[in-house]
Length: 578
Image 1 (cartoon, rainbow, N blue to C red):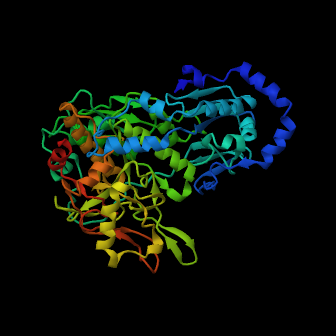
Image 2 (image 1 turned 30 degrees about the vertical axis):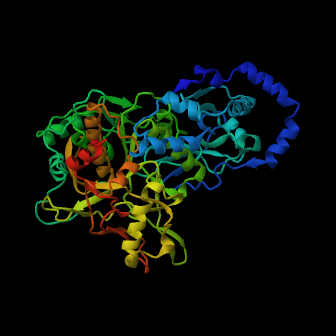
């Protein structure tokens, strides 16, 4: 975060200006108060505000308690940003790979003078002067008391909730803003959206015989990585981001590499941790992410973005997005094993997060998200009526989404089939991007006879995943102990991330730009350089109509494994071609 004094447009809200505004407002206060009650607008009218059952209510927050809220200011030129992303990501465009700097992104999207002025005056009129901004000037993070926050945002009611020792402050009711402000903000962060519960990744599967289990050596053999396929470029780096109060232990990483990293050159330490690494036990998820991005993208400098956990009102995922808007020097590949039901989030929030993804993409950053571990998902709409339930950010058109596979024969290094948990399907919010239309239409035609009923999904929505990797039965070292049977798309995602980092490494050595947003180029390959997964289906609704089954894999692209899994030498050759 840079303090808001960093630029004339976003100076720290001064007390003098606040005084002037207050004087001006006093003469208007009574009619203004009346109008504000009549003309309040809900920025996130479709946000789910119900608190999940696994959070216990502690009580109302003390009115004098300090809260920190994030104001997402309305940006300019979002349509130009989208067009720029298309041009720099399309290999057939003359602008392919001509990525922007953070400063250039900032001059494109930063909010108008009017937006800054109106929002500042609004905050000042409530005595709010302690705010920080970011380089792109499109987020303000402000501290205020709960009492002030509830006056600022009519309808909000702040309560404290706890789950497994984690305490958070959220509003139990939707918030609104005055109509004059409505057009200048996308949403306010810190009122809704509790972190989803982490998946139980270590489900033991009863099977006779000595199970192969997935290790770095198995992955490197399956995806055709040789001992020579390690990073050597000085200006390459990769990152994992974690938000669920999970931490990796440096000792676990060192132990993992000494057990499993003997056959290839590797690093045994993370180069940079951004955020606060908590103490206590290591989380399986955090250990998995770091150990597998660093053994696939071997010998490449690795960062860990970890839960900032600075304040109970913060939304950890949003905090990470804000951070990306404030760092000019970032790793080229980020893998994130995080998702929420699309229908639990407001359209305003998801649309703005998509813009943040575009901002990263035009800078040449590749964002990879796990597709989720619930197959097609299921939402119960009413009496005997169900639909599949897409996940976000997996359903964002501006990220590369990674599904999961298993070995056909779990006792041998064989070809891959669908992992039944692999998340996939169609967005109910975002339309299908141009880059994937022909691939998805091809799938829908090919398997038309065996598709689930059309009422379960939206065939015109963004379809995912884009590609996949093994997601079943990994070995992980956590709290100094080797743990088998770890499964989930949070395993496949860092593996694909590591592979893309190796390709970036070779591109950078050749003086080529980083891959950036991969999807337009990936879909133009039409499955070339990937192992096509054509067997198996994933989970769906347990009902009479679909009987627990979602979509099934098929030749070419499918909504279970995307285009398939990486054949490294072929993929490297395809993505090195100019």
